[in-house]
Length: 601
Ligand code: ADP
Ligand code: ZN
Image (cartoon, rainbow, N blue to C red; front, top):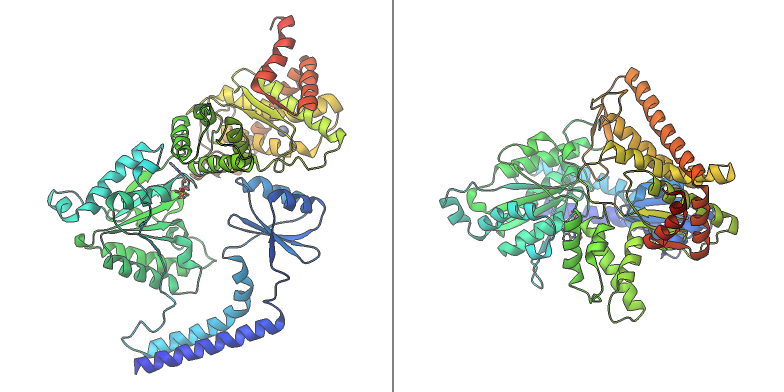
């Protein structure tokens, strides 16, 4: 009888979906106008600037814009969305965020109510169907089973995180021979939590563990558990483990575990119930592991701070491995790993490249090598040169050059002074990183750019950060000094300076007025330095504001003073920029030497 019911159910559901589809088509909801045209970022930017864009939707890395004439264009967004989102907003288009995949959403909007109705009925049927809880199959998770038949990923493919690899070696041992491992008295590993910012190589590491142990690798993303219908997440979890147990020894990798593993019951709205059920099921499964299961769960997150403590208890994700952002040596090794896959010219200096890419993740660096190889291929060069790598680096960091952007001579001159202001202040303030490059070639959303070449440091002194503040103020100070006017081009500088100053006061205890107090806890994510949870009274808030203001005022005054004093140098650098567009560190130093030598500085 269960069988018959089930068939009826499917017929009913199929019928309902068909009705919905027909209705949707009649409404024209499916006929999107000629689909979405793929464009590159500069084109999207140009459209926004021409005020031709009616709406922007951001979905993960993809940005879709609806133009006022009804056509849609789409592009893959840049690495630092913050900046661009602000820019969109300033230009009159407030972007909208969306979770799931684009084209489906419109259809889903129409079909979902119908399916919901169907689902409710299905659940009713299920209630009647005692003992047979396989009635609906929506819950089947489809973890991608990567057997890595072609080319296994191994630890050799992962560079720059030796400690993490070291910690994971035990898991490999266990998976290779679970019984022996148990007999030797090793504690059976169950769950490993990889913590690190996006692109730091967490997925790569998990795959490498599977590759080293030569076991199957199941992977699924936390968000996939909860994006469908209510009640499905939990059954997906059950299903996933059922499949995995059959293939053990194996690894189950859950990316973005924070999507299901957030503190339970914290936030009132937005499907908390669903998440709770999914999380509970995950905990049940983990507690039900038999030693013979030889199944290791590896999860990844960049927000360990939001995870439910229940997940971290002994017997669950009790091994936590930090996958750090690579330091200069790590970056060099990552570049070497990826450089092996392309033909590098003999003169290529990966060490220099590593030094000039602070803050780049492993994924960014892989991207740099890729882009450089593409550039070389396009120019039909036999090998990838240092210049290709430098160009690719700038592209990954800032978006592609936009030489086609029409910049009026007046605007170009202004940009030259703005950038020269940054560079000159950076050069004159003690404790500042040397200038690596200055350019007024528009790139991404910026009209120009001054790039420091940071020395690798694990801790930053207050003096260094005060220097940073002055450097950031250098652009605006030059505008005021030269033109007596202020432009919007300095907005990003001001934002960054304000964030840094606030961080110095509230997190680093670098202000006498506020004392050595942590007025906030930094949030451990990719943007650790700029975001923190405030922990102070409103009385203190006012003092913090005043202190931030003081730091910024002083940095601004310092920049103004330096530029006034060295106006000749400022003019010379700006003139050189107008002439040559880009100055490297040597060219910049030459100008500085000419100007500072006579005065004996
Ligand atoms: P995450 O899962 O932490 O977001 P991924 O593992 O998906 O990052 O990394 C994306 C890509 O970046 C990898 O496939 C690899 O090409 C490159 N990558 C990231 N980290 C490293 C690393 N430490 N060594 C070598 N390549 C790396
Ligand atoms: Zn600037």
